[in-house]
Amino acid sequence: MLTLSIVKADTGGYVGHSAVHPDMVAEAQRAVDRAIQNGLLIDAQVVTCGDDLSLIMTHRYGRDSHLVHGFAWETFRATTRVAQDLGLYGAGQDLLSDAFSGNLRGLGPGYAEIEFEERPSEPVLCFLADKTEPGAWNLPLYKIFADPFNTPGLVIDAKMHAGFVFEVYDLYEDKRIEFDCPADLYDMLMFIGSPARYVIHSVRSKALSEAAAVTSTQRLSLIAGKYVGKDDPVMVVRCQSGLPSIGEALEPFAFPHTVAGSMRGSHHAPLMPVRLEDATPNRFDGPPRVVGLGFQIKDGKLIGPRDMFADPAFDRARAQANEVMDYLRRHGPFEPHRLPLDELEYTTMPELEKRLADRWSPLPAPAAEQVPAGEAASSVSGLRR
Ligand code: F6R
Ligand code: MG
Ligand code: MG
Image 1 (spheres, rainbow, N blue to C red):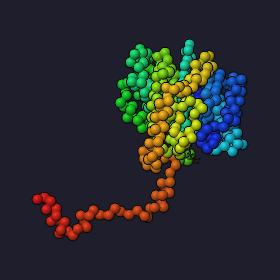
Image 2 (tube, rainbow, N blue to C red):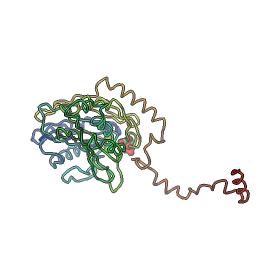
Image 3 (cartoon, rainbow, N blue to C red):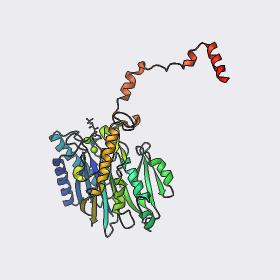
Image 4 (spheres, rainbow, N blue to C red):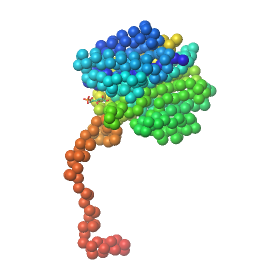
């Protein structure tokens, strides 16, 4: 079995939260080159999206491997040191703990890992997003694996016709459920339509009994019970030969759907599909970006990437994202541009509630009750007539 792991973290931004400094990329590249040489990794590439640095790695150690996770953790500590030396912003931001304890769960970095027998030809897409959260993949995954208007293979490819099983996490209660689609479609939509709480973690082909997609859904980043930020997500989708074609997997991104994130992780904004060099969310710390990197995997080697959104066919989505951004921005601090109170990453509300507590007073009584009792009675009886 081969494992493809993407492990990602924001270990410092250049400038602000907009990108990663080239020296950090070079540091991570040196680390992965050493790990390939010493046999830990078969292959690896370092890619950035916004202020997030992703290690895309192939190896034989399976998911949640302490060796691979430990390597990623050390690499992020090294890029943090580079960020500190250069005074970059938020150095080590996503390393929430001082100590590594076997795997990355709960430590801050996000990861998506998928295990499979490599097929004679193995096309995969790695999607990386910045300034949003794992629920951002719900809508595209639904379209890719459950919507025949997006994916004709669901209707006309015999290996896809049986459908796909979606594994959904409840991030608030740390539990999971599987939906067998298409039979369970309507049940599933009730949940995944609320992507802040219910997030698709993986998708499996029923006909092939194989993993088809996985996302970096971990529990919310909590320190001491306080929510500390959106986890900019990554996703892997395996393609072709009974799985969605490359074009079916990219097609949902031709619609720049609205996601939570952008400025201060507290606004709805469109998810803009961009080429790698445009994955720099500069306007209003957004709009949130997604890049799609295509690889052919051969004997574990990553042949690629091809920059899949470097295609004029996605220009319209980018233009539409800019229009939607203009429209949403004009709402300023009003919902639905600003997230609802309980989803804000930054809030002053608890402090305001305390400070303004004694300035609140009950609403005035309804006007009718202020009228002397006798008069009120006659006007009511007047109405009856
Ligand atoms: C969103 C994000 C940025 C920051 C914002 C304020 O995910 O990273 O929008 O929230 O730039 O950053 P601080 O609080 O670090 O000044
Ligand atoms: Mg950052
Ligand atoms: Mg980020």
